[in-house]
Image (cartoon, rainbow, N blue to C red; front, side, top):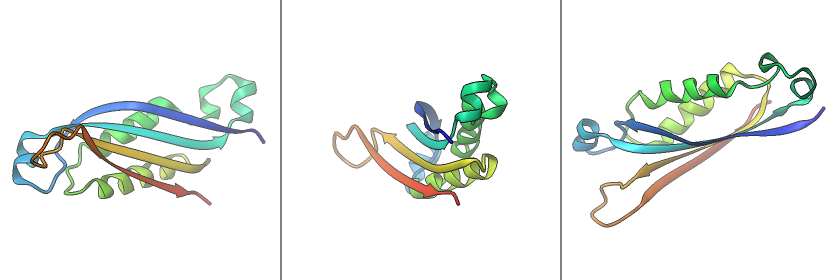
Length: 121
């Protein structure tokens, strides 16, 4: 078995997550990062996308979850992790980081982020 790490970085979405009414109407820009650990031995030999975790399919799962409005980023992160691990049971470990850019907190703030992970047994 050859463990590998797949990282999908800086996925950008415009979405409607937040506690404030205005956030649900105006929306905001979000950046999502995912780290996935899996056995890559078969894919490294076969050179076939069917033998690995498809980046495209992971992106599509993340996009679907980002389109569902939520009050807090923790809820979005949990949904993303659950959906990705459900679709790809060969993932041993998954981490997601969601950043809300320029959050409306009354000051100059670049981003706020929530990071969550899970071990898939």
